[in-house]
Image 1: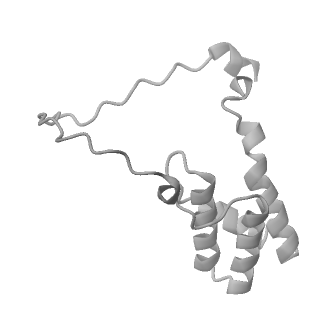
Image 2: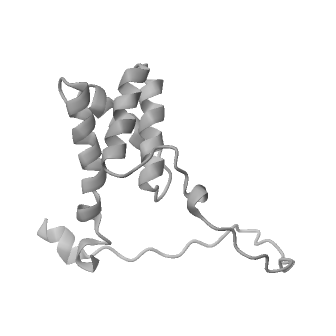
Amino acid sequence: TWKDNGGVHYNSGIPNRAFALFSKAVGGNAWDKPGHVWYEASQHLGLLPSFAQFADETVKAARKLGYGEDVVQKLKDSWGEVGIKPGAALRDTLTPAEPVGPAEDKEADPNGPTVPELPKPNKQLIEAR
């Protein structure tokens, strides 16, 4: 998947399929309830969310938008069809690590944590578009 920036096109099929299943289950136009749910959920995602976290946000969005529990259940079922269980937090699947001892006492950086520099955009690629 290195040719696809980590599989963005391959992996986007999972939430896309959940969206299609949800749209079909709800009926009507995909840009109505399903579109509103997906948009609202996308406004509350952190950096690098997991599929389960995105599924959770869609459930929260459906409730926030006032859709009934019948719609929420169809949403959960749609995620289940693609193997994602809303509410299945990553922490539930992790095994705790062995303790490593006390942390070193370091002085805090007054400028805050350092952020790595992002790679420069490929100017030729941008101009080609």
